[in-house]
Length: 288
Image 1: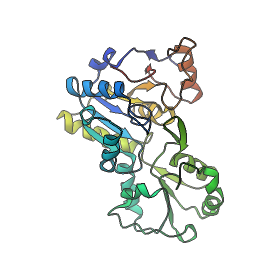
Image 2: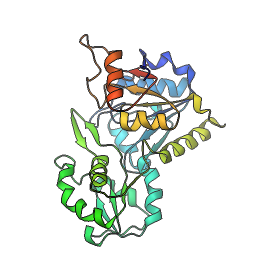
Image 3: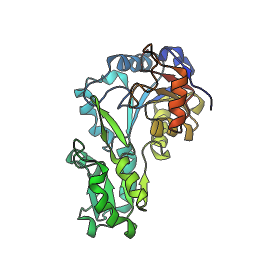
């Protein structure tokens, strides 16, 4: 495994890429507030170099997340287009509509289902499971769902998981996401389908957006993925044969930060290896 090249800022390599596909949670905000330096870096790239396309495992359609980004102080100037796992997942849900489905997830994720005609029923009456995350991610864990999922697995009900993330940063805490429930269901023998990162559908949609914005075919060698999730952002970029800039301090905290408070090459390589990922580029936090 090749160690990533540590860069001091996006400006070091910006000219090598025509498009950025940038993660959101852990890179430009933490669920409570935005990171001004990261937003400024993206805004500068977006204005001077090429389009920034946000690519998120949010289980809601991207248009339903605009208001949240605004409220967190993420300026519209820092991005040109937005593709979410919710956008890609709606295609999977449309194939199975009207279901009926057992819905797992908070009320804020209702926009995922709008206009699809999916019917919702208790788990014992469902023909598939639609999961966006725990119903109450402030207090619940996957174990709260074990008994009900264990009853569904022998029936081979497919789970459509709209958020492959296992955990996400909210302020200074990590909270469980849909991917953690999907992992539990798969371990019980249940079939799982996902369209967000690291899976191909969300990248296909993002690259289609990139082609529209560039007005020409996309050279995949000049597309840079930016993200902090090794299992999602890094692995997804690798599978799509796209370069990745790993933001080490996001969801992984200070695991790759050395004693002097700076990103350490050896620790970064070890962290990536431990999680089964490889990235050509890395920095602690996204800055210009």
